[in-house]
Image (cartoon, rainbow, N blue to C red; front, side, top):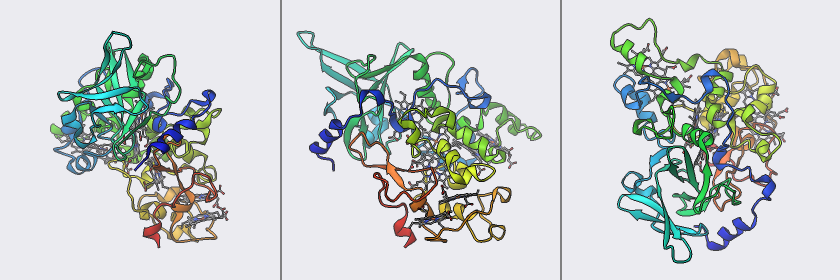
Length: 394
Ligand code: HEC
Ligand code: HEC
Ligand code: HEC
Ligand code: HEC
Ligand code: HEC
Ligand code: HEC
Ligand code: HEC
């Protein structure tokens, strides 16, 4: 699918050293905290119980979430677990090292130079569900972590540079960058339900973004529900949050406006930082609240490929008479009378006004992400590609 020439070309267009602040899918390693309920939860006691404990009573949410990308964004680096997401054993092109199987485990290995033989590192975890890149991680003394310089893209069956590591940094080991304690904790904390209070160990049942990431610890809720006393739920009911609050919750990982550095290329990455993007769009600045993530996404499962629900959301405000329009997912009090499109007043909205953009321009991977800055049709944009949902809409 991707030839060697292309791969080399992507390396030839590396960004200048001054703007190496491109991170994998928004993986800015910021240390910013952002209000009480938005901080990364830590496992201080047994108040967190894991998704399986919710299954008996919330079968439908459990089933939708199970094996979703949120659920599978962290794996142990074991071939038996990774199955067909496992990279092939051998040299990582342009990586300067090999990834090899060692029983069920994976190791990174390279020549030490001279007569020292080989240098090797056990790979402990891998982040990313496999939709795009998967970055391997080695935990160092339970205090810092090394993220491999190259990430494996299983769909394309290639290794390509881990965004943010295009240039060698002083903290690079022979295999990739070392993240000291705080960024290492943030890194794991955005890909796990909850991390330990100290150290970097993540309990197996806490891998991935789980129920309790969004709803808070479940132990007290379960005890109460089992006792049949439902006066106090002891769990966060999220359907009653305002769009602003809800987006802030998602923005803890998907990036709120305050997490985006406006002095860098990040400012333009409205396809990567969705909560930030929605705040900037006119649909927000000329109305009461931003568009809520759950107007368009079911928080318990992966994105829908059908554009119908997305377009309906637009019509909640951009119809001739919004008082006559009822869209299930948009509360009536959030509807405002918007203008009409001069081009198409029925369909195709997100395809033209949220055009997909290349996710990782610095790699040879051509996958796109939807621009969440809803605005004028940027058909002329250099990165623009086929509009979303064109087949379905024609
Ligand atoms: C023993 C059964 C049981 C278990 C286990 C359980 N729940 Fe519940 N949960 C309930 C019941 C009963 C309700 C009330 C349902 C209703 O009123 O619609 C509820 C309500 C909820 C609500 C909505 C709260 C509200 O105010 O309406 C959420 C969110 C929730 N549970 C999440 C979870 C999560 C997350 C877990 C796992 C950590 C979990 N539950 C485990 C029984 C359970
Ligand atoms: C603890 C961090 C965290 C929180 C909180 C979080 N997400 Fe995510 N989300 C992720 C990560 C990590 C991924 C990437 C999964 C992968 O590896 O493909 C992701 C992926 C997604 C995707 C893409 C799924 C796909 O089909 O590719 C959607 C949509 C999404 N999140 C929506 C939300 C919404 C809506 C909320 C809030 C209700 C939310 N997320 C809260 C971390 C988080
Ligand atoms: C502030 C939260 C946050 C931090 C910190 C973070 N990530 Fe992520 N990461 C995300 C979210 C959100 C996504 C999903 C991106 C999307 O699809 O919008 C993601 C996606 C990814 C992916 C899948 C990339 C892809 O191709 O979609 C990988 C791999 C990844 N992160 C690795 C890392 C590593 C390694 C670190 C730390 C060294 C890290 N992340 C730190 C939030 C975070
Ligand atoms: C990414 C964040 C996220 C994750 C992970 C998540 N939920 Fe939810 N959940 C939400 C949001 C947001 C709502 C409200 C949806 C709405 O308003 O349409 C919700 C709604 C619910 C409800 C309905 C009651 C309510 O709060 O309105 C239940 C029950 C529930 N979730 C259980 C679960 C269970 C069980 C899991 C794990 C299997 C889970 N959720 C995982 C975000 C999440
Ligand atoms: C909650 C109401 C609401 C929703 C939902 C909504 N918008 Fe808007 N949007 C507005 C308002 C208000 C404006 C300000 C201009 C106007 O009155 O139309 C606006 C402005 C716009 C503009 C002009 C932007 C500019 O910068 O010139 C476009 C294009 C647009 N919306 C497209 C969409 C699309 C596409 C969707 C669905 C993906 C959508 N809107 C959903 C309220 C909304
Ligand atoms: C007006 C509708 C709409 C709203 C609101 C919305 N999204 Fe999306 N989102 C989309 C569309 C359209 C896609 C592309 C779906 C596809 O792959 O075909 C998408 C895709 C995504 C993806 C997967 C990466 C990609 O772009 O393909 C993530 C992650 C995501 N959205 C997160 C969020 C978060 C977080 C919020 C809230 C801050 C949010 N979205 C609000 C319409 C919306
Ligand atoms: C084929 C592409 C295309 C489709 C499909 C499309 N639009 Fe547009 N829309 C445009 C163009 C072009 C404009 C003119 C302004 C601009 O350059 O973006 C526009 C303008 C708008 C405006 C601003 C109107 C004003 O008077 O300022 C809104 C609001 C809007 N569209 C909403 C929508 C909604 C909602 C849908 C779906 C029902 C939709 N559009 C479908 C291309 C499209």
